[in-house]
Amino acid sequence: MPAIQSEALAAFVQDIFIAYGVPESKAETVAISLTLGNLKGHDSHGVIRVIEYVDWIAKGWIAPSAELEIVRETDSLLLVDGHFGFGQVIGREATALAIEKAKAGGVCVLSIRQSAHLGRIGEWAEMAAEEGLVCFSFTNTHGGGVLVAPYGGRERRLSANPLGAGAPLSNGEPLIMDFATSTIAEGKMKVARAKGESVPAGCFVNAQGEMATDPEEYYADPPGALLPFGGHKGYSLSLFADILAGALSGAGCSKGEARVANAMLAVFLDPKAFAGEAFFQQETEALVRRVKDCPTMSGVDEILVPGEPEAKTYAQRIQSGVTIEDSTWERLTRLAHERSVPIPEA
Ligand SMILES: NC(=O)c1ccc[n+]([C@@H]2O[C@H](COP(=O)([O-])OP(=O)(O)OC[C@H]3O[C@@H](n4cnc5c(N)ncnc54)[C@H](O)[C@@H]3O)[C@@H](O)[C@H]2O)c1
Image (cartoon, rainbow, N blue to C red):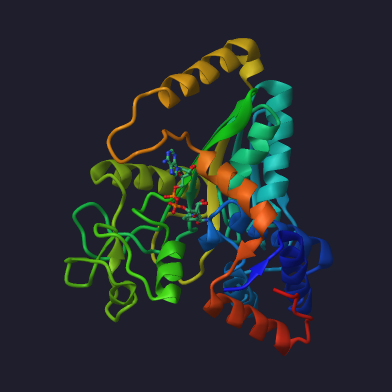
């Protein structure tokens, strides 16, 4: 498996996108976001996505040059339309606008429709936390990307509908919650399939409604379905993600459309506008100390808080470089060859 320094990897990805018709500055933004996905340990939302995004440009699912449009705006509300531009571009611009409003007025509710895949949702929470804001978000797949069975079901009816949240800590890395409401993100199923590995039991049911672990059964015809995490609780959160992200924005809820895109509802809050920054910091830091001090159960070395695994992986991979599984590297280099893009040394 090749290991590549992150800067060289991002430059390579940017060059591939430019060769496939993406404007240079947007190609750079997407390349940096995808490489950050690998650096943070979420390989499923890293450069493996280049292959899919190039295909989606050809299909017309991503409009590489599209610009964000503000549809409606008040002091505390922002409804934007991404016109199916790259999610990494639309997500970054929309979040920056929402941060500005939340810092001015204490709160901003951001609703995004017609964004192409927003990628790693935690990236938007990280941006807000870096600016001292707390946030939470609900995302759906714009009516497409249906992968998950409702609680008790065996067919795909819902998308992975991820949840995000972030909170700044003055004495360390922010708390970042970022996960799909399915037991595992479908990207992890893809990575397991590419590596020829199985996934943990309880992640999906096959077409017969039985628990299975071989990703090939998930991708069979008829296909399997991912399960919602936490039984009826994750299932309920997923339904509300569809409603908050899809029904409010104009994007629509899960209905099995072919196109994969994202809609998102995100709320940004400035602690200064509530009980104050000092109280917020004191309480969040004490809470983190309290949970991390808890004696561990057998077999567990350390209690982590959300965002900590990603921060640890980042610290390691920024030094060692990003390792990419052979099948993904082979497909990336093939895309590069087709448009004469130079391949960096692994
Ligand atoms: N754009 C989309 O439509 C879409 C859809 C689904 C998933 N995704 C992305 O896929 C990525 C992977 O999602 P996932 O569901 O596989 O995430 P996951 O199951 O790996 O969970 C990650 C979250 O759990 C936290 N975490 C992990 N171990 C922990 C521990 N021991 N203690 C405390 N917290 C811990 C992490 O800090 C992070 O917040 C995410 O970045 C998500 O945004 C995107």
